[in-house]
Length: 249
Ligand code: PXP
Image 1 (cartoon, rainbow, N blue to C red):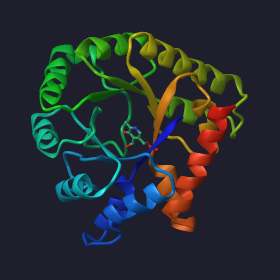
Image 2: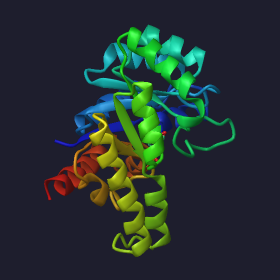
Image 3: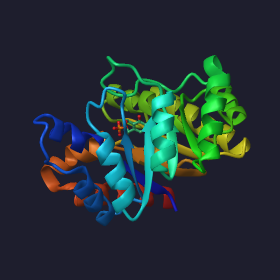
Image 4: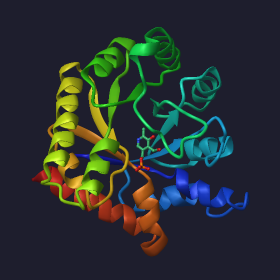
């Protein structure tokens, strides 16, 4: 059954707007789990703009589902991951000026470094997922680096849906969807788990959730946005329902 990893970074974004205690990401995680989240994801950024170190530690200690730690492939983050021991480390590129992750990790350009990071994490018992563009060469490099999972960047697909006014049957949308589908097939052929995420919302998630062999979707911004109006529990439940229905065909 397809799984949903809920990214709660933007609960922490709202808290950091006042640098206080609310809303609490741990409480948000419990609400997300009550709504059907299979795992919880946080991105501990170098600039700590939203999630803080203490959030990661508390989540790891308190939530009853897998904690996915999204992180840059830096020595600092590897050290934190080895100490906190999330269920999986999700390597992403990170830029100080980006508002969100802008593209997949260029594994080919830094193959030796990525391999070393994956090995250090594996030695601590932590499997690695690598966030990649829908590019067979990057998937090949991620597999060679020892990743257990590749998460395909669905941002270009999501942008195509927006540009097409929501019409997923649009040719440009279908072209982006075909790239994600092909990437997923390459990931599975390489023996890795196929995950996908970025820019997904209830309006565009169904074609992605219906792709063959997709194991998990990682979704944050649209769920937290919807939660402002209906609460996290319901926002997650709506997303999970759309995913599960689409996956069941
Ligand atoms: N997957 C990865 C690797 C990400 O970096 C993000 C954003 O933090 C997401 C999924 C979730 O994207 P969104 O917030 O657009 O749902």
